[in-house]
Structures are given as structure tokens and as C-alpha cells.
Length: 608
Ligand code: AGP
Image (cartoon, rainbow, N blue to C red; front, side, top):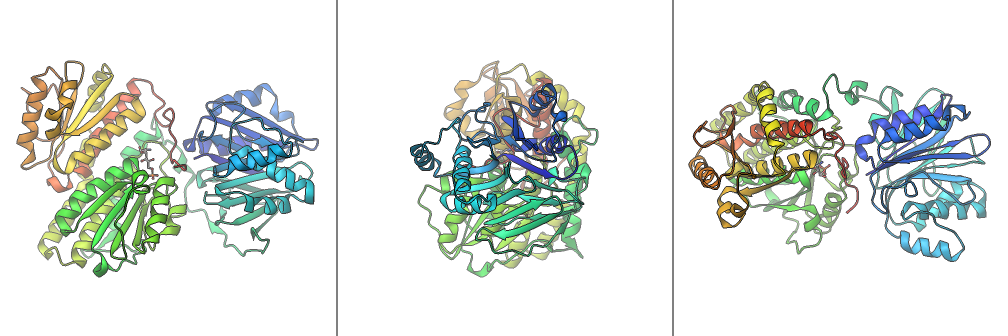
């Protein structure tokens, strides 16, 4: 996923573009660049690595000396071609007149590149994007109009793309085009913006226009005209920006990740209060069109952290609903034999709603006439187009690449739906339902109790930095929590963290254990605890340091212990995810990692 911005107005354009890119840094940070349409020509500035490197280049080149009031910008998460200056956007046509930035992937770029090279076009990068800029430039030579050139070129492109395009000769407009990648127009007073996502527009405009697929916007300083790619004008509603500018501020926290971890109790309270009136669950902001009677099979598809939330749902729903729940990594689901039909309910889970694997999996499910539901934190994202039922996570914008509050919101959504489905399918008594509801309602203060012990967790994390690899283990409802704990730790601290079912350790992984391989055990109440304790003893017998998280404090076994409030085993994933999020955060902090923007990662992976 990349971030793209555009500006046309009266302000110094470089500053406008840079601040927009700064707000989109979570979308990728391998390289960045801007292009200005100066009265004399198109000027391009690029830098590899972090956005601060581009800032330095602009400072060195005295960008403020350029009198330009329109420009485009890009921040990249590399798909085709290494993160280098040559591959950084914006990409310029060979005559230097047409320039563009792109988010998405051009699937037929190789054929296009070959065709253009046969026409004598010289390429300078390994990117798929460069094929588009030369294609539009060739079309411009034929028709002499940027809008028409883009319209003629688009049908020749296959894949997902959001483009922002400028031509030197048409210095009164920017063209924005959307197909399967998000793009928003920010409508100002005698100035207009284009951006991949709303954080780049916060505090700048009060009204926005969401472009839909196959729409093109001709953006001028005081006019925005939206058309279908075929040229027909589209009447679009201007929406009021309903997100506070401080959403993209750390509000005093050292990192967005810690801020978002600490927001979890408030998110839980808001979701519970908005969904429970008179002890009844309402999902008023959810669009539910599920024919529950038809549902004979449930399949959940997701990636990464969202996949771990789905694994928790499987354990909880199969216990509550007595229905088979299949969970698949979306990237596997796409290429395997899937036994779906009209009696299947396929649920896509995606914080960003732009994850290509998950979207492709839902497109496939649609072919089987399955009912499709999505749980997403971005109801303005691409994924909602493939679903007849949409459940907003309402976790607020999540900036840190490491998913935390959105994971909590996904879990809560799954528990809510478990209760709702159980009611619809008459699988739960009124008393049991009330008891479960009460447990959910009491969760926020239990999470606050864990958050109040951050210092204890931080000191354990500091000792964890001595190790290059660790093992998480659990049984029962928290096996997915162990997988999530391992993902969190590895993706932001770069420590090689892996997770196993505790009972599986003796079947091989125990060979890894020695004094240099700590084992972190996640305890829940009930029958699993004694078994897990003996797994800890097995680990200790191999000199592995053992850290207990939750459960009984067994000082003769545990080298370290993180206490958690008591809660019913079935609901414990909602609690135990918090200490492991904090452990990952403080370990990465002690190692001085780029916590909100870990190396090689992006907030949403929009390529398969
Ligand atoms: C989680 O911390 C990672 N950022 C990553 O695994 C993420 O969960 C995954 O890419 C799925 O993203 P999505 O929820 O936006 O689809």
C-alpha cells in the first residue's frame, strides 16, 4: 500500500504535499517524492527511505524558491522494484511534461512495457507504475488533452490503481482516478486536495468527496468535476469530515502504538454502550443482511492479526453455536479447493479493508453464491463492496502498523456476533446470555487494571531484549493469543518469536529450548491450566527461562510473571492480548526500534 497526495490552490505546494505525506507515512515508507508544476516545467524531487530524507532533499534544493501552487506526492511501500530513487514516485514521461503517482498494482505492466518499448519508449525504473506514465504520455501526443489521454489509456490497464496525474501544459488541473484503490478529494476554499486516506485531509478541509471505482475527478483550484471514465458527469455528495484532527496526533504518547493500546478500554465501553440498550444487543451501525436459517457453514478469511481474531472466533462460536467454523488465511483460501455454496456464510475480516488477499478471497466466495459479511475498521474501504453485511469495528483510525485496538475491536465484534447468532439460532438461554453480557460489560475496567501495571511489564520487556528468539505457548481459547503475541513481538522488535500449542512442544519444538530461549505461557482458567503448568515445568527442565502470563503465580516455576485479572476462560483472549501487546511494545522500545513504522512492513498489504 502506498500513500498519494495532490494539491492545487494558493499555498506553498511543497509544504502542503509534505504534510499530507507525513499523515500517510503509515501506508509505507520505503521512498517518497513530490512533483511541482512550476510555470516553467515539471520539477520532481525524490528520496529513498524515510520521509525525513525527502525533507532534507527539498531543503537542500531550496524548494521554497519555486513558485508553484499545484503538485503531487507519493510515499511508497515497494511492490515492483527495490525501494530506490529510480523506483520512487512520482514518475515522469520522457518528454518531461506528464507526471503521476500511483497506489495499487498494474497486473499487465509487463506486456504494456514491452509494447511501449517496441514503440521506442525508454524506461528508467523496474516499477509497474512507469508503464502507466508512458502510456498516458503516448495517448497525450495523439489527443493533446490530459483528461482524454487518461480516458484513452485507462482501459489498457488491468489491476488496482489510484492515480494522481499532472501535465505541464495544463497547469490549472490535476486528474485523480480510482479503480480498486482508495482516493478522496478534499474540498477547500479556492484550493482542493487529493489523498489516499482521510488523515492527510484532517485539519485542512471540512468536506470531502469519496471517489468510487471507475471515477475520475478533474480537480481545479475552485472546482471539482467528477466523471465516469467514459466521460459522463457524476453527481457526488460532499461529505462532512467527522474525524478530529487530533486523531493523527500522539496526544503525548511516545508512539501511536502505545496510544492505541491505551485506547482499548474506551473503545470497548463505546462499543458496548452503543450496542447494548435495555440489556439487548443492537448493532445499529452495522448493516446485517444474513439469512441465519440458511447458514450451515461459516468460513472466516483474513490475514495477520485479523486471522488471529478469526481463530478466537472459531473457538468461541463453535462452543456457543455448535456450528462448524472454518478459518483460512486468505492467501491460502484463494488457491485451495473450497467447498462453498449458498448455505455458506463467508466472513472477511480486515482492519484496513484494503488487504488484497482478503478482498480476492471474498470475490471468490461471491462466485459460490455464499452470503458475505465483512468486519472492517474502514467502512469507506474497497472490501465493503463485496459484502451484503457490514460490521464497522469503530476502533478509530489506527496509525501504528502493528494492529492493537483494531484487534480488540475485531474480538469484541466476534463476541457480539456470537451472542447475536446464538440468540437467533436459539442456542443460548436468557440467563446464560445475560451472564455473558455482564462479563463483556466488566471487561474495560479489567483491561485498565492491566494497563496500570505497564511499568512491571516494561521491566520484564527490558530483560527480554537479551534474547534473539522466544517461544509463546498456550492451550484452549488463547492459542490464537499466543500466535498474536508472537506476531506483535516479531513485527516490531524483530526478535524471532514463534508460537505453538503447548501440547505440541514435546513433539519437536522442545528441541529449541535452552537457557537462551525463553518460553512465555498464556494461562486461562479451567482444565487447561494444570496441563499448561506441566508444560512450563518441561520447559524449565531444559533450562529455558519461563514467563507466566495470567493464571496462578507459581514462583517456583516462573522466572517472571505478569498478573492479569480473573475472567471466564472463554472471554480471556479479550484480556490476555493486552499484556502481550505491551510486552511487544516495551521490548521494541528498549531496542530503539521504529515502533510505528517497522522495517519492510506497511499498514495494509494491497498486493497479493
Ligand atoms: C498486524 O499487526 C499487521 N499489521 C498485519 O499482520 C495485519 O494484521 C494484516 O496485514 C492484515 O491487515 P488488515 O486487517 O488490514 O487486513
